[in-house]
Image 1 (cartoon, rainbow, N blue to C red):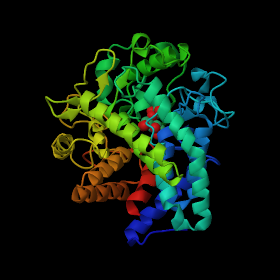
Image 2: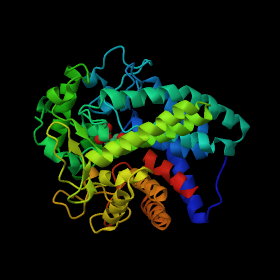
Image 3: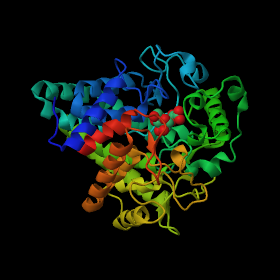
Length: 441
Ligand code: 2M8
């Protein structure tokens, strides 16, 4: 097995991270956590593949393949692919609630009808890039898998850039907070205020997450009832994306989602390059520039010099400053003054490194609760990439060390308290472990 030269401390962390990924392997995909999330999640699969690239590249490809085998004919990659061997009530809302159309997914597995940030092109590129370190057979496998994935990744981008451009602004809109991956972020609060809560389902099905985790660390019941209302509205519209702004109460342009969307085009350009398709590579680069320009135009708040989520229905920017506003830093074509403003915000008392999920000084900051305050390794990993892209190598290294220290001292937790560092949520969490491997390598 390929293992980097690391100190004893790092060796210990490396072994424990590899063990977490082993424990969470379910035969053809990785679960984020056995206890809380017993199915396959979309962007988790991408982060996990980035770590599996070091310890078991075949599993990384298998994981991505399992997810894309569930891709819908319209190109959307579902946010959860349900494992048929897991009982319906092990996760709520399960397949029965989503009731996706029979044509969905080319695999005999059920899924949700939502998406998550399209991080998979970046993951595929990373797995491919590291394959040759494992020998010629792995390099051959990587090329075959990359060629299989490429048209599917393109279809995923086409779905998001065409069908989800609900506002006609060149950005993809999300139709549910779950699509952002940052579920209860304060960025959605003002939009959710106008979303009717649907308690019918909640009254019949007690929340499964509350049975296995601390309620003060999870989204409130009020938010959860609204999440369910949004699911039912989107489902009852046949998961159609036509006239979203008129029909659906939550249509939002998120800076993190769109940064990942633009970043995916850059990874696709690299993939198209190795697949011998220079024309396609240059089209991907053009699209990345277009999305970056739309993001810089539409989600930038000149008054505060920050990136914010925009409600596509009202045109209003969210008043909340969240970690999602730091992620446009990932984009090399981001104008230099905006990149500098992000660094200023990240260094300020509102955030600091590792960045908490929301502005520490904001009225809605909640140090213990999910995406409203705690530190998450995945978004900090993306932020660190942004620092590297824009030449802030010293701070990128500080952030790398801080993330590793956090996990070494507290374990491979799902998220961490922004003051004490204490781990919360699921204890053996896949993306924390996977990204540790990358940070150690
Ligand atoms: C969380 O989201 C799911 C719903 O998709 C949940 O709360 O049950 C989020 O942290 C999301 O980003 C993540 O992909 C998922 C699984 O780890 O859990």
